[in-house]
Amino acid sequence: MNKEFLTILEQLEREKGLDKNVLLEAVKHALTVAAKKIAKITSASEDVKVEIDPAKGDIHVYIGEKEVVSREFGRIAAQTARQVIIQKIREAEKDNIYAEFKKKEGDIVSGVVYRIEKRAIILDLMGKAEGIIPYSFLSPQDQFRLGERVKAFVYEVKKDKGTQIILSRRHEGLVKKLFELEVPEIFEGVVEVRSIAREAGERTKIAVISKDEKVDCVGACVGMRGSRVKNIIEELRGEKIDIVRFSEDIKEFIKASLAPAIISRIELDREAKRARVLVASDQLSLAIGKRGQNVRLASRLVGWEIDVRSREAIEEEVNDILQLKNIGKKLAAILVDAGFTSLGKISNVTAQDLSKLKGIGEKKAAKIIEEAKKFLEEKASQAKEKEKTDLPKEKQE
Image 1 (cartoon, rainbow, N blue to C red):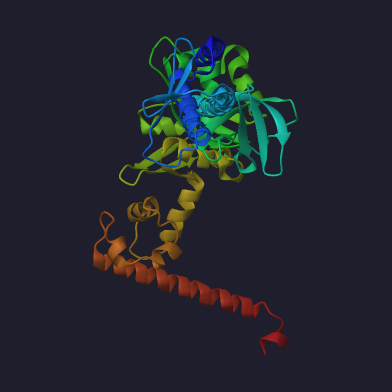
Image 2: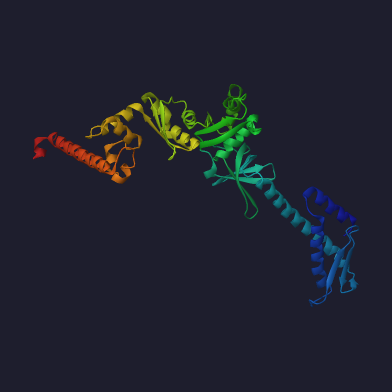
């Protein structure tokens, strides 16, 4: 132990963030154990003390008041110091990596694909650590090659036999952070992302609003000739992105979220957060989208249940209910608006539930339900008779 050793400690303290005093204490402890073995001390009552001069690096070992001198101490000190330093460096680096990436939870990182396993993709994160993307956290469009650079959302950082950095390419946060990178107005807080609804690999809807009247939130996100949003789409492997203008007026927000469909009318149940959207028949498939995707993402984006119907379908439902006696157009419309869009639904409800609707008492509700059941029974009976008459004579007998 000498000045050269202390210089090494000081260098490690600067470069690795290790505390020199912690290292010296660890070396002292190891030397105390070694001193007991060398001096063949078995009694716990005999006090062994090790001192290291922080200025010169000199070692002094005392048993009680008497200093013990041994050539072994220098050799043991050097070996111990080397082991302690290596161990402390590893521990400190692990702690530093954990602390660094723990702060990045909810952010995105860039890494290079350097291993493809059966259950996960492993990224090299700037040579500092490994990031794991489980296959369940990949987008269906993700197909990676070794050496390819990839951006991913930091989903979770945990200490489990070292630092585990779990990344995701499916999370909605990935889209939000990509917009922050590409759109300076979002990063600076001039444009705000209010909500995101995503079906990874297929389509994302993102609602934005501007805090500055002079800044068009949608235009800022799209960029000149679509340059900004194109970069995001490219990173997401061709995933479609709808940029929706947020509005405090829920009807306007719903209209924007269902674009490009043209909306005829919107009826709101604010208490239940349910919206009935009426469109022309030629706009129905556009509003609903392929496999219901457009209306499903719009519902999640807005936070309301959205029921899209064509005006023609509503009229048919009303006409169906008008077949019951003592029910006029007004009452039929009330039933349809409340979700009782068929005689089958009316026949399966209780009089108590139906009487909650405006203008319908419990007695009237019971009468409507009874009439609906009777009408359906007669209709079923007529269908059976028709089926029977359509059969060949030998089968009728």
